[in-house]
Image (cartoon, rainbow, N blue to C red):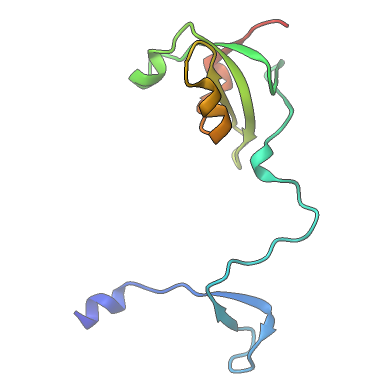
Length: 130
């Protein structure tokens, strides 16, 4: 059992600005997460507007869901439904994720209030002109 436990490492968070002097360059161990620099924008807010291949997506805009044939069954069941863009995120690879609520879903307000959205990529939706 001791050998198995030794196979699993333990990660410790440390603040590099606070050295305990025992090992050069090694910070004191802490369970607290690192602090963020001040004045950072809230990453949960997402972007207000983004352009993908010449198509503009705006938070609050209306779309029609058009998942591709390789989409999962839950996404395909929403084919043709209109939705409201609630959040827009761009990942580290540059792909745009659109968090939406389905307009004819009776739980849309609850989804919006709790921040639980359905996510689609830009090619899986069509923008409805305002």
